[in-house]
Length: 291
Image 1 (cartoon, rainbow, N blue to C red):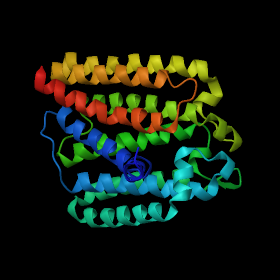
Image 2: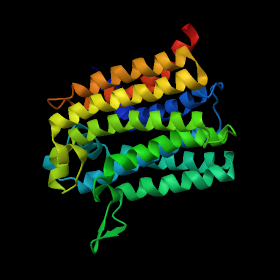
Image 3: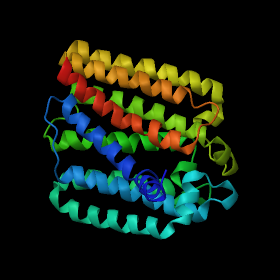
Image 4: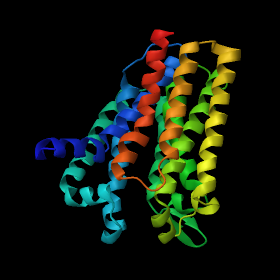
């Protein structure tokens, strides 16, 4: 790959632009599942910029937190391009500040609560056993915090934005299905980070139950997720396209994460595992067109 294109590629994927697109795609998917058209508005821009900012900020903090001999491909890139990363942090923060003026006040409150959790995920501001810790270091919270924030942003926010009642059956099933899908992807990253989490004394599900049982858990979560999709299809929306797109993408995602043993390259996780979020949106969209 030529140096220019390689640099652009690395900035797009390692600079967290891609993951921001993936989270936004899940947000748009929620509109489709509610039977609404895709919309691009202040919420879309804010979610993109805030995701971009949070991930870039965390990656910048990781440069100094992680010892150089433990750098993976992404952290090594970040350390070698720290000025680029800082520029991305500033740009995303400005974009977040501008876009907040284009969303409803009640969404600002909800997003603020999710934002606090996202910040506490990385910064040691929680006092636990007389020591200030990052929230990801407490118990088995790491993967569940990611699940809660991503699902909240990609499901609850568009439901509020569309004026729907979150506490009705269909939105709750969408939330449950999305939570299980994100949990499966998150467990894959926890399994990837086992070596580093042991060193930092972070308790995660793969460390607690072992990698073989974690792989079995991938399959169990896949079946549970398809079960939630089936409930929604059979008793609520009856949309074959949505059910087919969700099910196919969930099966592909499970195949991708199940085959991360032995540990794959960082490109595999960044492009394929993260990319499963965009793939699900695409499968739902295309299946709704075809079926």
